[in-house]
Amino acid sequence: MVIIGSGPAGLTAALYTSRANLEPLLIEGIEAGGQLMLTTLVENYPGFRAGVMGPDLMGEMRAQAQHFGAAILQGDVTSVDLSKRPFTINVGQTVYTADTLIIATGASAKWLDLGVDRKLSGRGVSTCATCDGFFFKGLPVAVVGGGDTAMEEAIYLSKLATSVTVVHRRNSLRASKVMQDKAMSTPNISFLWNKEVIDIKDLDQGKVTSLVLRDTQTGAQSDLAVDGVFIGIGHTPNTALFKGQLAMHDNGYLKTHDGSRTSVPGVFAAGDVQDHVYRQAVTAAGSGCMAAIDAERFLSGTLHDTSHSIHPPPSTSSPS
Ligand code: NDP
Image (cartoon, rainbow, N blue to C red; front, side, top):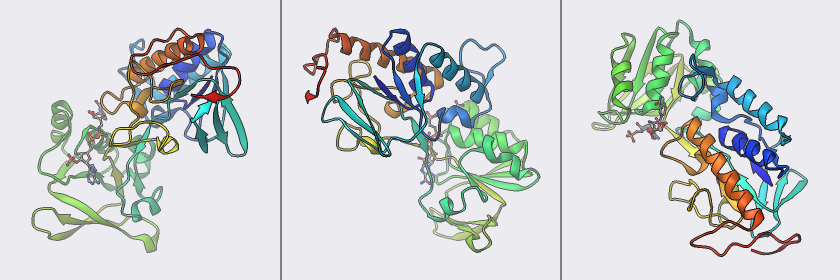
């Protein structure tokens, strides 16, 4: 039993499978703990009346899984072979094999694809206000995007920055009404509508000095002087490792059916890597539990599937 990913989905799968004596190996990746490591107070994870800090919650989940015997390996998976069982999972030069695999690799923040945004990452460009907002105390910043992420970033930054300008490519927000209202009623948050970022200055100085904007209606260009820019335009699922091996939706998220089953019998998926709709810590944890139970039933030969013929894995490799 190998689990890839160490957010709420992966760690819950590790908790359930270790308690079922499946001796899971969890490969936690370099961004260990997932997206909750980039947040502060989490108020909507059940069981914490006063909320819980994201990194603390992940630390507890990790310790709980280890307490029941889950082995945790630090390292990024570099390739997998899911064409036959046991499956092969490579971490650099080291090869692991697994009779069953749970994928919980999550999703990562999207960049603008300007090139310059990544080059100035950590030097004025960020995808995480709670991580980097502090550096812009008393300075003007911009947030790009019109969804809940962008509103959340803007509201957080409004408490630190002198001003927050939300730059959105359309004239209406995608964010939920409650988040829109909160952002719009914050005095130092303003909105620039129908604007896309076409450049970020100044690579030569190695810091952000302004954004070059283009009006999506008129094509007119303008400059916005800021010291920082936060990109809040959504997420990309971490599925590159599985391209060509597992069925995916057009947007790159893994396809699952009958619970957590992927297109390859014995491979299960949990959390944001297969969920572009709910994307909550609690739903990720819940789907990690589902994957663990499905994997356990697969190993014991009691998993019933409507669209695949699934057999328990043989002890040596054989065609799947
Ligand atoms: P969304 O996909 O909802 O929004 C992305 C936003 O970024 C859209 O406004 C989109 O514009 C814009 N955008 C996308 N690509 C680009 C680009 N290349 N250039 C400029 N703008 C771009 O993603 P979110 O991360 O905001 O939210 C994802 C999900 O997570 C949602 O279901 C949301 O409700 C949820 N969420 C909930 C939170 C909460 O409840 N506290 C906090 C954060 C997220 P356009 O509108 O034109 O498509």
